[in-house]
Image (cartoon, rainbow, N blue to C red; front, side):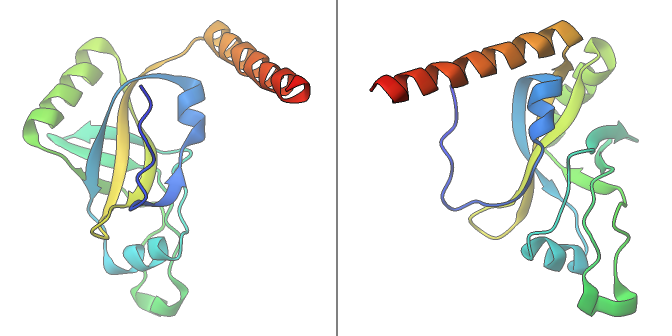
Length: 157
């Protein structure tokens, strides 16, 4: 069942590649611990989470390899663009994620980075299982067939 797009969300970045590379099993919303210049940079709509992933270390969840570019007016007080950022989740959700990653071999992939209706930066993370090459080919074939079906219906319609 697909979620409806929330009109109060301001989407900053989306990891479209994650849905192609992984079979998404479960998703949840997590807060992101940011510094001031990162928030200002995000408000201008500049971020990239395409190559990022989430990992657990020391009983905490971290967003690794996400790029939030420097905020030019900040000058010398800027942040490091590719630093690790702590993700804020409830302890029972964190335990569930740690168990899935360590025992079941799952991956935690960030799907979207956005501001919620209260203006707080959130990241939608998903518990995912890596797809094999043949699964990716099948997904591509299905997508192409659906696109072709829509074209045929539109042309005849």
